[in-house]
Image: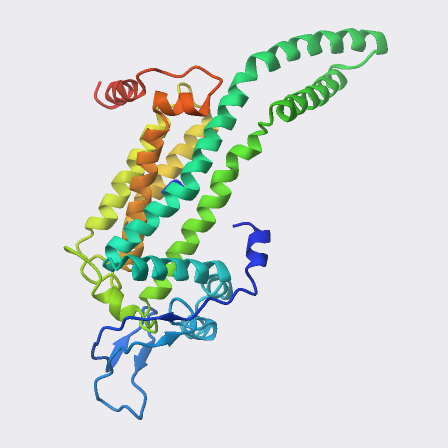
Length: 352
């Protein structure tokens, strides 16, 4: 759970994915329900009631579903236009191509290919951005002492100028805040650590998470040429990756790992503000809400969500390491025993 803009989306508008050979798995398809309620798919009239086998074929997109097919299914099911457009976007198709390429190059079963693809994305994209975010936050924290000194001097200068020009208290506060923002902005430019850069991780991770989720949903549809492979590509209790996990094991594991991430993050706040408490409680509620949601989507999506959250939690612990802090050359001092401190804080908060 926790790890793209318009310009990136527009750059992919004319993207056409290469044709990919599909390793078919034979299955008897006579009359199978679609994932959309009330919509069914039947074999063509020329086929009659004979068995239809998934053959090795070329597909126009990585999912085996053309843009018109996805939009048609979504429209027939009463789905909103924005959802069908998003599911048929170039970025989603690019993610489909990536997932299929990982599976075909590695030769691994689909459940393991999903885990490998998730590991690749989290390690090569989101982990460096998380490290960059840590550096930016460290620089901003290091400037707080200098900002405090500047604020004291500026407050004195504004008070002197206010007496000279007869400013009211409202005018004095206005000039103080205006000049303080200017000085702080100059400090951010000097150290190249504007706080907005710390939010880059969210602006990349969230669209990527949504795109990979929709890509897996497209691949799991009955109309997908790879649906047969995914149906037989699971393991253990989730042998069919195209159907929801009826045991609820994956959804519950997802909810637990997400709640653990939230609670570990909350331990970093010594005295949270009212707004921070509100955001924290909202995140807890959303983590619990993800459990029934994950129980209604294909197991391929639930597996991706769980793997992504588990890797995100592991990377969060990794970035707490003193060795990583030395490599990143963080400006603010950090604990030499972060894991022991984290465990002590967790025990003192929930078991005392």
